Amino acid sequence: MKLALATWVEVEDYLKDNDGIIVPIGSTEQHGPTGLIGTDFIIAQGIAEACAEQLGCYVAPPLAVGMAQHHMAFPGSMTLHPATYIQVLVDWITSLSKHGFRRIYFINGHGGNIAPTLTAFNEFYAGVSLKPETEESKTLCALASWWTMPNTDALIRDIFAEKDGAHATASEIAITQYLCPESIKPAAPDLFVAAAGTPLDIHNGYDYRRRFKDGRIGSDVRAANPEDGGRVFKQAVKDITEHCTKFFQS
Ligand code: NI
Image (cartoon, rainbow, N blue to C red; front, side):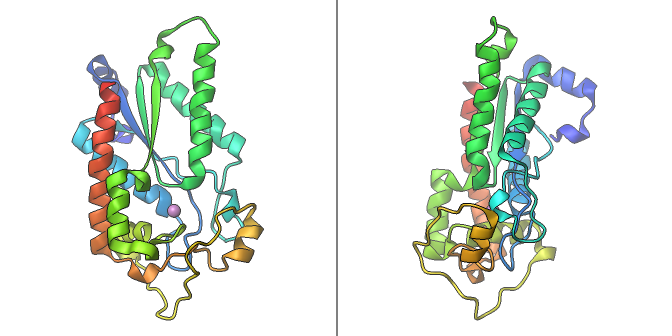
């Protein structure tokens, strides 16, 4: 159920017997010469909506711009400062918690969001822990980055092996090909693929572009196809639905 398509009356009714909600978080950033700029939030939103359907819970609108400062030398990328991102997330959590949502489950599509998201959780918790106890002490948050779920990761290794790479991965591009078939961009047959083991210690956006000229990190996007994207998507939905079920029951 999409929060955006509900009325406040329906949400108030839902909260009488339920307290779980899913929030997709992603990024608006370059994904190499063939990947969509919306890749990270398109995938997080797709998985989140499918999981919410299975769980019968609400799914919030996606946070479509994340912490992506290291992609800013590539046109079209957008970022929040880390401190802004943290504050935005704390405000989202506080808003949902105020209404009585007590289990807030974030489905993430972007590696750069992981550290500031966990910091945002602790910022919210600190606001609770430093005051006399209120109902908000029952509000708990969880984070699932879809590509790190063990069975999803194993399937990605199985299908793409070392061709997956570390950014603009074959698997994430394959999922967007599955979800947005009208926006598939063909890869050049003679695409250069960086050697495996490329360092990941990227600093700023210029440093990134100097070292990874077309934006990919070690991925061979010629391996991406919508059929395999669908397989990885469905595995991620299964893994995350199971994980979220346990969190909602915790
Ligand atoms: Ni991505």
